[in-house]
Picture 1 (cartoon, rainbow, N blue to C red):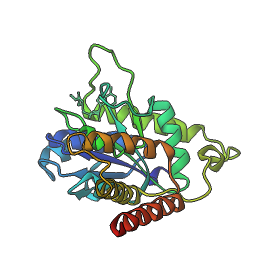
Picture 2: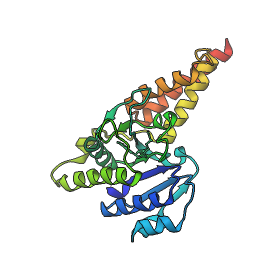
Picture 3: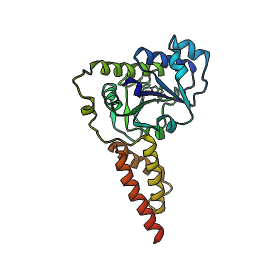
Picture 4: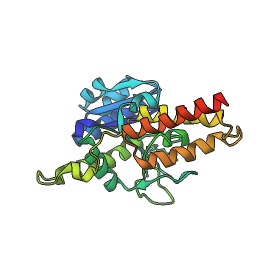
Length: 245
Ligand code: SAH
């Protein structure tokens, strides 16, 4: 199951941190690393900080956008070192590990880490169903990237070790129908935005923040694949009717 949990690093600036992340992952039994447009990779600093976890670096996938990194994932969790403008469902690392493992039973899941300087943008956080915060010192809450990955992957390992054979992970996850993937959800949001523009619901000044609020509703709902099809059917019909008026 650990192989279905991917660690995604967005726009990392220091290659040494990528190496530290590979080491943190390997010590906890995770193998899948995805890098979204890293500033410098591969790099000798990455290899030296990986300290023998260079197999993780060698297998790491490099992609251009966060959407590409998580397209096939049913659960995307974003990490945040501080409170953001639009509050999102927020869990602690232990609860996060529990949910990641439960859902990894069914499909691919991702845990996203941000830039050393600025973390994740609000738009990137809006691509997640859940946010996780490591409850650090309120007046000094930002961990080094490698340290944050170590804390999260330790919780994932502890959870994996605790799960006994008798515990049904499927029961924990609570879903039997397939959940929509991140790519399917992104298509739904594009379709929704187009439709809302067509029926003049979106005012250009507030369109972006309205779309973020609507995303929050749907991200919270954990839509199944079939439910996305129903919603898109409604949107198509709305578009047709509004064209024919
Ligand atoms: N200055 C940035 C923090 C960047 S730290 C900010 O204010 O957002 C780099 C990354 O490490 C973050 O994007 C996040 O992925 C992770 N991280 C650091 N501290 C964290 C914390 N307390 N909880 C969760 N993730 C954390």
